Structures are given as C-alpha cells and as structure tokens.
Length: 130
Length: 130
DNA sequence: ATGGGTGCAAAGTGTTTGCAAGTAT
DNA sequence: ATACTTGCAAACACTTTGCACCCAT
Image (cartoon, rainbow over all chains, first blue to last red; front, side, top):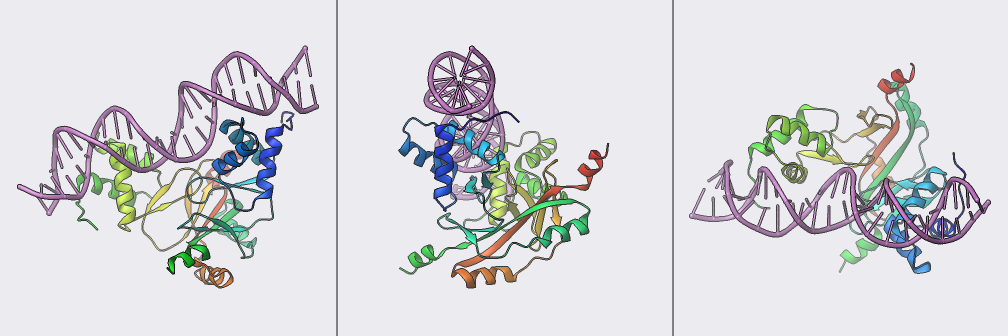
C-alpha cells in the first residue's frame, strides 16, 4: 500500500462524514464540502470517499439508488424511507450467527450481511396526516 | 392503470427471466434477448423490466452495483459472491417478525426488508485451491 | 524534490426519455 | 382505428479517469 497523505480536502471530507449522522450521499458531502471550500471538486470528493473506505475509516452502503456514507461504527442495519429517502440506523441487534448458519448450509465463505428495511418514516407519516 | 399489451418482446424478456435462475442484470437479459431477436433494443429491455416489475411478475433486487432481476417467488434472502458476482438464494428462513419488531421500536411503517450476504461462493473457493 | 493529490473536463456506466414508425387489440 | 410499444439516438444521473499543476512529506 502506498503512503497516503492527509490533505485538507481529505480531512474536510472525513470530518463532514463523522459530524453528520444522516448517511449522506457523495453529492451531499460534496455540497457541504463546497460550502466550506468553494474550490473543491466532485472528483476530489469521490476519490477521497474511495480512499477513506479502503482505509476502513468510513463505510459505504448500497441501499436504494446512490451509495450512502457514514463513519465506521459497530455493524448495524438500516431503514430507508421510501417516501423521502432518509436513512436511519435500525435498533435491531446485529445477528452474527446468521453468517455461520448460512456458511454451514452452503459451504460458502460468508463474510458479512446487510439488512435493509424499507417503509415510511415518522416524518412522512405525519405529513400524510394532512 | 392503462391497458397493457403483450408484445413478443415482453414475452421474450419474461421467458428469459423465468428460465434462468442466476439473477441476471438488465444487460445480461438484453444480450440473451438479442441472441433470440437481433433487433431488440436496450430501451425495450429496460422499459419492459420496469413494466414487469410494476405488474408484480418479476422482482428487482438491489445487491451490489447493478440491479438484478428474477421471477416472483416467496420472499427470500440473497448471497452475492464478491469474487465472481454470482447471486444465489440464501437457504435461510425469511423472518417476517423483524418488520413488526422494528415498527414497534421506531413508530415507522415497515413494509419489508432485504438481507444480503456477501462472501465467496464454492466455485471461487475451488479455484483458489490452485 | 518527489510522488501523491487536486481541479477541471472528458469519458465511462447504467438507465431513462423524446420521437416517428410499428403493431396488438 | 386507436393508443400502447418499439428501436434509435440523445439525454440523464452517478462515478471514474487523464492530465497538468500543486503541495504534503
């Protein structure tokens, strides 16, 4: 692995992700970064997201359409609102034994699993009350 | 809902999906369709995939990068091989109660969930033995 | 000073859409 | 005959890449 620098842009991107907890998309991260450093480019954001993921500092999750990013945390599941696209961590315990169970049944190596719930969040439910 | 026709192209696309069980991508479906009807276009494939999904005849699943399609079946989970991208149905019972459990804890309406395992399939494990 | 990083624009993927012609009903 | 569907090409959305310049080490 080549030596990696710690540029202002990379620090900025990482700090944005650690400070917000709404699982932003690359574009949302870009917009916030741009508001703090007008000259930053999308490519820099995308490149650094990839680097931070490969460094294990952030997590990239495929949910519905575009990827979402978040700071590392213990493994957990996600809920996506199909009305507003908001993403929340699901308060359901991570079931570590599922991997072993599937490995036994299939002979595959099972490294991890993702569980994504879909539905309507409380904000959107309120709005629907109108 | 407007009246929908049953064109040769739509039948072909549906039959391709029902006859293969490898969860093909739109592009793979297009290639097979093209081999049987050289003039079919990608747009026709994409449009019909969307129509078949909205008719509830096929299922569209977001796994890693591009969407995968399969004929309808009872709800089930998926395993994706991170080496060769093959997709398999996971022989793990669908846990219907998870939705209620999350709904109770959050107050959200929880409609469904997807569970995706990642690891190395047996084919790729064999190859690694070389 | 050196090689990784940046910003820009262009190119890549994967998917959707406008339109004129075709076809299932 | 009607209006849904097709094929084509162009447009879109999201992401990656080539390149010349920049800057962290």
